[in-house]
Length: 493
Image (cartoon, rainbow, N blue to C red; front, side, top):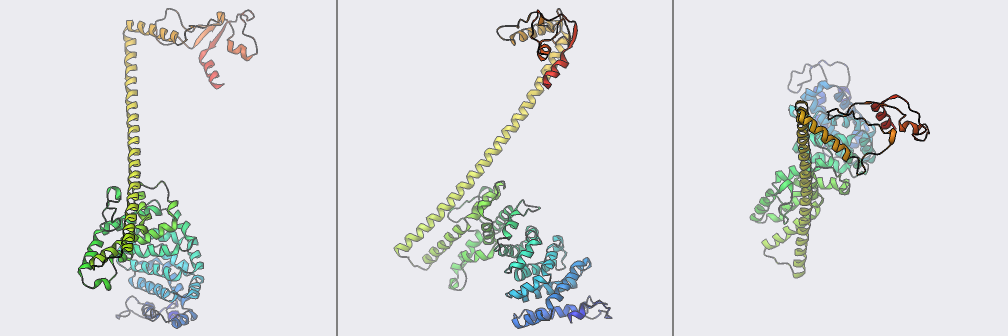
């Protein structure tokens, strides 16, 4: 029936009946209900039916069908087509679950490539209401059933960048999908080849996988109403993980008689009800020692708590045991009482240590921000000082050009400063080879000019030609020496 539905020859159905919805001129009606029937049969978990379906080439037919749908974008807005794709993927999940040889057949038939195409789905389609969110959940379930547990399929999935696409999905998917997506990522990390893919991932909204895990951790604790301090630091070292929701569940459990024998304690059910255990598992697989140092401070503060999650949860479980014993009127023996008290003290000591590390990190951040602020104000101060100096120089220029007495005073002050800069011995006596650049009787504060007439060869030139600078052997020579060009030549050397 499936093979007939996939034939390209035209079909004369009009699709006017209730069961023929969306099947005008196509085999969609027959294909839709055939897939629905197969899903009901394969969901029974009968291994014989699964193997018989695979022997008849059912996996190849379903993968061919999914390829047809994924290549044609016209089916993205067709609810019937989306429903059929969802049923086909669910059938593949049912027959691949706990069957290693069927998983290998799925991978060799091109099933991994099909899953990769669906992981590339635009996240904006989730809000269309046509069933894309349900379809993507089926894809994640198929990865869990057909990929996880088979090394060949896992390697092929990683080669096609499946881990990167799954992390992209985790970053933008709705909250009700995060647990499923994060769970399949953690299971894929049982393959050591997957860990570098997770560590090297970079998101569009968050910087890295570590930042994404810290963001998810804070979101979970906010939903659980866990008491936190500044920048999500520990505020209660006696109950570092307990939130208001868990405390209410504990109170209602104690109030109901006999419920402790039938229901799980809140400290245990908390592990399954939120993402914190999965976040800790994924971070442990990546290795807390490899956490990058350039993370934001708030992410580092959250990861300090994540790193101690198992210790805090263990202490929380023992504390629950103590409360239950007290509620039932039972007293432990002396040795057990001492052990329970030591466990409580050790847990609180670890929480206090984490709190100290968090506040130390925050203090370093505040000191760094203060230092950067001081440097900024120093730059502003220096800028204003430069402006003031520029104004003073301009005012001095105006005075020298408008007040002759001030001009003469400036000239004398400049000469005294020039003489003082020559040292205690004053000017160096070079005889005829010393040439002054000042013009006598000129009342200006700037240097006289760039050109000076000399009657001998400059000492610098004679040294370069290998001639001893002896005035008795140097013939008088009238030349024009360009002081600016000579200065530039010295800078070049």
